[in-house]
Image (cartoon, rainbow, N blue to C red; front, side, top):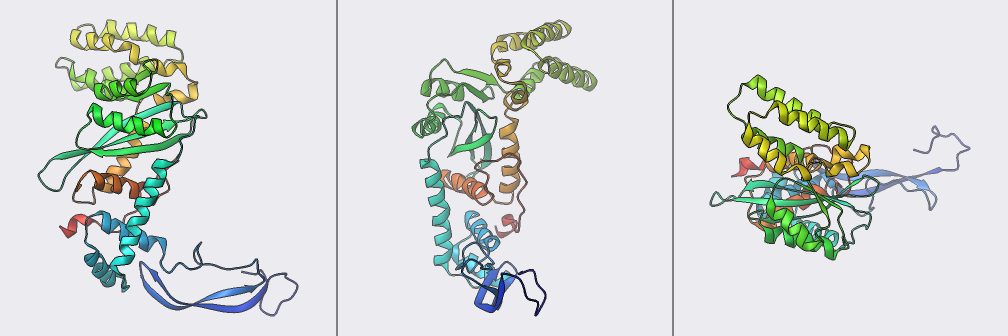
Length: 351
């Protein structure tokens, strides 16, 4: 730690015995009388945690929060932690952790949004409530700034992707400083688009998610073989892989000419064509990120991996708390790469 062997001299940093911590809780049990080496000098200090007064590791706190978010009672959490780790934790400590996450969520929603956000990517992830078999949805808004970096802006738990819920989410973003949005990227959900134009001006453009649009086109194809369906998908993406808008339009005409026998699909394609190519207004290195909601889909895929371990949602507040916990504990408010979170327990086994 000080860079010298025992009894060696000449280093500025000097050993100064040990400091003893009475106890430290970890996921593997409680450690007692932990000896922490000390270094002489005011500016040299060796710590196990960022905060010198922390008594529990972050991984242990995360485990307690996961159980609380899963709906396990505070008394049961205390018993489980005692059983699995040999560490007794009071209900008050667990409630303080819960309040901490809620305060962080509230603070995040009061913070100002960077004025450099130009593009809004929105989508919803569906789940099922624990009681009644009803479904709920978490609406999520991601923003892309002028450098192409992505930010998680806000989310809303609700029972449907209605216009009222989308307006509530969008107005919250506007109140935090998102005064104008150049481009909305979403699937073909009219409620989200209408809410977008109501909250912001109708001058903003709308980019249909090309992946969702492909799914809609395939539903309108006549009965064709699996091989032809694969060729259709390949031909479809060749249209939008064009380098320029002019080349894209040329490929689109060829695409429609080849598949003209499927009139319903052709009509649907032509009706939505103006919303399919707005991503060409932006730099080439941005296009693959804003022509689909895959940016959000990646986030949702990992969120779904996380929530599968829980027996379902309790209410709208629980949806938001669950996502807040998922994001906050992994520091994903501003991210570029995302990792599937490591899990400790599967809470479906408790129900």
